[in-house]
Picture 1 (cartoon, rainbow, N blue to C red):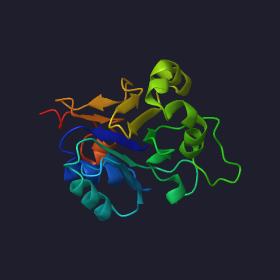
Picture 2 (cartoon, rainbow, N blue to C red):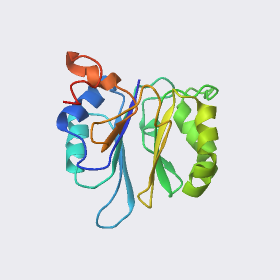
Picture 3 (cartoon, one colour):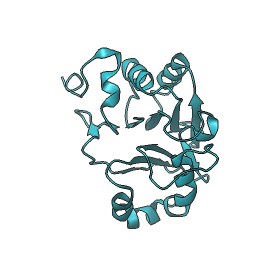
Picture 4 (cartoon, helix red, strand yellow):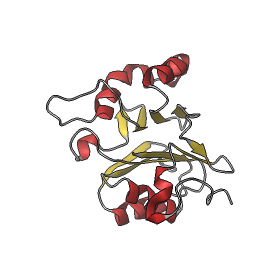
Length: 195
């Protein structure tokens, strides 16, 4: 199960980043707004845990930071399926879950890659997305979670209140699931984070 997470302040700890990657080893990535240029940025398909952690720690002061680590269930393990996905030049999207009905007959593209291409007209504009957000959540099911970072700096979380999703104690970080928390043999769940 992939992890999609967003931090609105101070990024992620080294321990969090290592756990994200250890539990989801098919490539990591980040989305953020460059504090100087104010432009939307992405780094996709980081294949090495140390490179992933290093980049995440470098980005801890950017403000809003979105990350994703993938477990490949469909599609090749190559950059073409690395998160985050560009939504034209308007936003970046990460996904946790599996979209049924999105099967590449050539087995090259992931379900998220195909879904993003199809849904781009709806989600590229935040105002349009907000009009259909509830219907989108119902259509994709509670199991699928999306984080969309817009070039304006706005963030939309689709299925934010999913039973598997969790905010940290001070509501500065949101995680699509707790699967990663069990990495390194620690008990799965968030009890250790809430202290």
